[in-house]
Amino acid sequence: MFLKKRDRVMDLEPDWVHLSEDENGIAMNSYFAEHPEMIVGKMEMVSGPYGMESTCMPDTTRPFAQQLQEAVSHIDGEIEAVELDELADELADATIPADPDVKNYSYTLVDDKVYYRENSIMKPVDMSASMQERIKGMVGIRNCTQELINLQLEEYPDTVIKEKQAELNSLYEAFSKKHGLINSQTNKRAFNQDSSYCLLCSLEKLDDEGNFKGKADMFTKRTIKKAEVVTSVDTASEALAVFLSEKARVDLDYMAELTGKDVDTVKEELTGIIFQNPLTDQWETADEYLSGNVRDKLETAKVYAESRPEYAVNVQALTQVQPKELDASEIEVRIGATWIDPKYIEDFMRETFGTPKRLLDRNVVGVQYSNVTGQWNIKGKNADYSNSLVNMTYGTSRRNAYTILEDSLNLKDSRVYDTIEEDGKEKRVLNKKETTIASQKQETIREAFKDWVFRDPERRQVLVAKYNQLFNSTRPREYDGSHLKFPGMTPDIELKHHQKNAVAHVLYGDNTLLAHCVGAGKTFEMTAAAMESKRLGLCQKSLFVVPNHLTEQWASDFLRLYPGANILAATKKDFEPANRKKFCSRIATGDYDAVIIGHSQFEKIPLSQERQVRRFQTV
Image 1 (cartoon, helix red, strand yellow):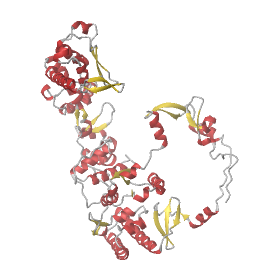
Image 2 (tube, rainbow, N blue to C red; image 1 turned 120 degrees about the vertical axis):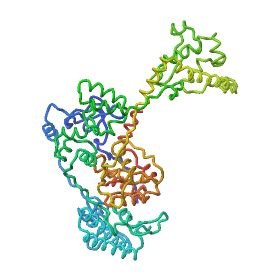
Image 3 (tube, one colour; image 1 turned 120 degrees about the horizontal axis):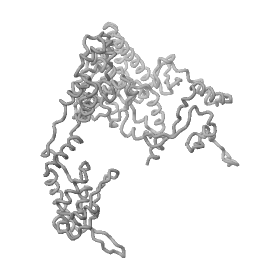
Image 4 (tube, rainbow, N blue to C red; image 1 turned 30 degrees about the vertical axis):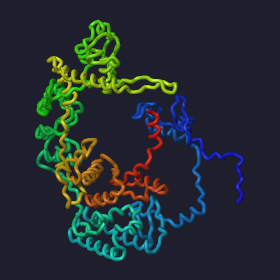
């Protein structure tokens, strides 16, 4: 083989893969920079989550259809078919179009041959005869299990369900007798690329050591109950519970339709149970409205109630849930607290250190605070040099009281350093003796501030009121999940009261920490919350990142609670370099209810280049 160097470097990239800038300096694809007539709208820089970013703003002066037609009219070219090489021809001959009844990334049988569906095609599987027999057996069990799930969802009679369960038992017994447990390593290697492998694993109950305990309830019981559609109720309270379960919000028109009553009657019946937020005009449940910063809400309600009497009920309810006012004895104020006005720090300094009035009046000495940096500064720390209170009582000759006060305000320990010469270079070393004395003076100032801060009645009243307004205004929301129905959940498992409340917290709270003890049922809480979030349209698919060794157990528990769920659980092989990109594509394109991956696997999924660029641009 002879290799010859090319005369020139081949241009492998067309111009349109590069970035360029338009006449306004906005970065964009070079094609659109050169052909602005192909942009429907106007490119502008706007404020985004990571700073200024480019966006295409619509041109509202003309119909969109007209603008699109003009842009398309500039397209001039032909579509040329790409010639396939011999290898591609062979691959095309071996594959067949995907059967729409076969789930993507699943095995299937065509003329008793094993095929694997991947997107729009199905490819024959090249493996040993024994492995193919295992796959054929598990395909039969999978199809029968799915048929059984569909029969339960459609509420078929018990006789039909029992016939299908008998068929499933027969298929499972024949398979396990010949090939062992579905959860065995050999069967896992054969079938773990099938999107329904986790469903098959959930058919077997295993102990913590992986030993077989028995078959799942799917073999003998109804594990799925079809969601019941409520068409009418008697009371407004029942209608509210139904709609919260179905849509996670309050809708008076829908509730009026359910009850057969007019909207005003429904509002009257739900007085004290729902409240109209004056800032948004939206109706909220009592647990939502009567929580959060209830002091601010009360002030807002009072303002609106002056001109709109219907908000009087808001004022009354908010007044009843105001937090108990804390008094001075219940408030611990540390020096350096940023909510304290600098004028009070200056008063403390003047009264404690005896700062001369002339220095304060001439603004030679003073207290400054920056809201931007969060730093305190004592101006003119050395101006009061002859004051014994500054240099001896509350300070030292090496570090006076003003400097120590500044350290205390900035939550720093006062330290004293000496400068020595070592190897011809100056070096700062800690003076332990002077530092110890300065630390004692610092503690004296801190204690003096605690004694001083609430001593004056007027100052005490102002600071206590401000503290209560800033830090004692929030009422935690008490989430109630008793109205949730959980369609698709197995009827054999009933979530406990605290678990339902946790699910409601996830659905309505925007952010959630399930700080429950071991054994409280957090796995089921998160599973139910994920399924309800998708059903309510709050998310498309949930990603669970769990310890590496628990991915399969998580998948099994997920399907035990929701046997009909469509989930994807990652294996170690999925994140090998050769398979990682393909698996991430499955996550992105698959219509899964949930995706379960391990901690180390999650670390291998990079952020998109666009997001990384936006992030770096803000640094």
